[in-house]
Length: 356
Ligand SMILES: *Cc1c(COP(=O)(O)O)cnc(C)c1O
Image (cartoon, rainbow, N blue to C red; front, side):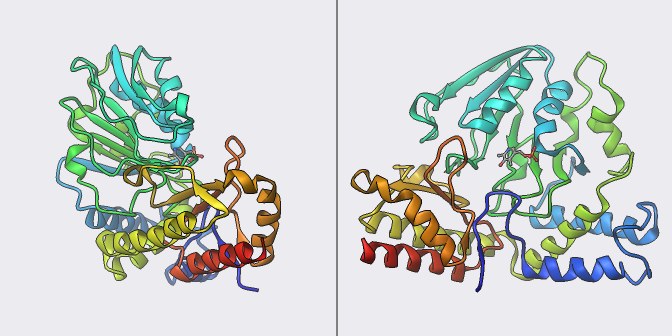
């Protein structure tokens, strides 16, 4: 039976990426070696790293003055690296979910942190709108897509201080005006590659302004200078990222994928609203994520939750259980998820409705 991959991360990758990665495991770039065993200093891998970085630059239209690097440690390490490198005394955070809270917690190790707004008391089911950001903070941090709760910040915040964003789960899903940001980071395992690599885009002028000593490996400048090869990079994950970026470019880039993402999300939200068994967790359409679509059983059908989960699984629908901290359902509709999979989920929801 065809499997439909709705997992939140690691998550579905394009078939193109899987196929090309398989080829590379057997013979990487005609080198006669596997990508799993080749030296990161080989000319073949250096070319792969350079191509991957230039694809990121091209697809996101990154202006000059910015550096693109690939690091280890996941997005979670960025929670600490950002304040360590950018914060002298004070920073500001918008608390829109579990990842945002974790980022905020790490920043507190390095100075004063202002939580400008939080949606925590409403189970993070909306994006706070009217807040003010202290003008004397060193930067303002946002999480553009809240993977666990299914909200997304679709407009770039307007602030007078450097803007930092965790875009782990919506990078490459839509165009971004990079010039509005001083630093963007994203763990690869949602829209780009298998786990193991983190993309960081940095405006160079924001670096070098803190007084604390920074361990070499945790200093962005080390990795800029080392062209993401200061130490051994995650060769395999970078190679897979290169394939995904080629796939995205051939498909027409971030504008083209955004159009598909909007269509897929609209199909599914429409069905959740129409179907008597389900209700969307996020009420305001403006705040709804196009990547992680969260829903629960309607009150009078709460006892059917487990049954629907099992029914979906029997139809090849995988990974729609909500995050362990929130329950309900979450369908992740990342770039690589085909519209046919969304349709399969909708058909399953309809069939389950007619049976109940
Ligand atoms: C998945 C995710 C993270 C955590 O990424 P790791 O690579 O596991 O550290 C952080 N932020 C967001 C928004 C995420 O979706």
